Image 1 (cartoon, rainbow, N blue to C red):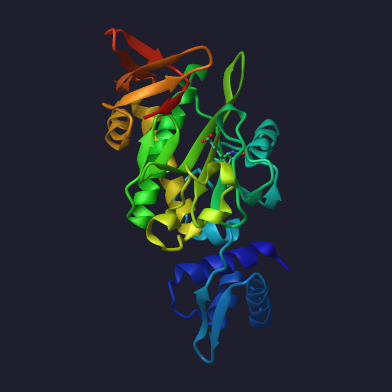
Image 2 (cartoon, rainbow, N blue to C red; image 1 turned 90 degrees about the vertical axis):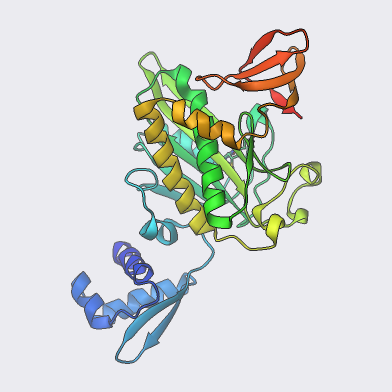
Length: 325
Ligand code: BTN
């Protein structure tokens, strides 16, 4: 079975938006027989696609399975670069680990690694990341921007804005960003971002942006340690989220905003980031490896460094910390 044709067929059916496509039309388009078209239709049905076949009219796509396979995402993806190459694996220890490996092997700029579940998902500060099967979006994006390594942390902030925009667009919910990388709904974490770097004397070889989005979990899908602090999009309004739409929206905004950042710097994105931030203007406690500081979070610098004014009037630049509010 020619997988490219099956893939292309799924794309045409999705693009048809519920209209019938005749077997003859599809046969002509792909230069194959109508029987071969039918075999590809069967192949899609075996993958869980529901396709109605109407005499004299053709095939209508009724339902797509809830999977993050490229075949279900790429046809309607509106990006030029990010996600044009997608690596999908049913289950893996961590998409970060895979993405690092693919990047070292030369994966192109914009490669996306997706999975349904991770057995060793990791968060910042080597914390464990819950990745319940088929409930969320566990994804790593390989970028190869031509910027100095010092600019890498800003990509976390840029990705955070992209995540917020995507959640808003797909669900109508209004998330907030807690510096630097937590996306919150009603004060609970629904998404985390982990940006890692491959660099050498020539500069950045690859940025690996890991995004973990809690989409359709119920409370009991989370491990007891995080039940008090985590949430999912579904837990907010009871609606099951279309994970495929969410991935497409996320990749679209990630491409828009990383391009904007690379072309025009952080200025515009800083304004957007601050407008979504739950941290700025609030009293916070910043826990760092060697000390804890308390004060008012006044803003972030153009480099994405948190500006914390302590009660003695001193302004501190915070590069990495756990923030409590
Ligand atoms: C954090 O908030 O600490 C960051 C969490 C990042 C989790 C994602 S899920 C996809 C990718 N693979 C991982 O192992 N981690 C990131």
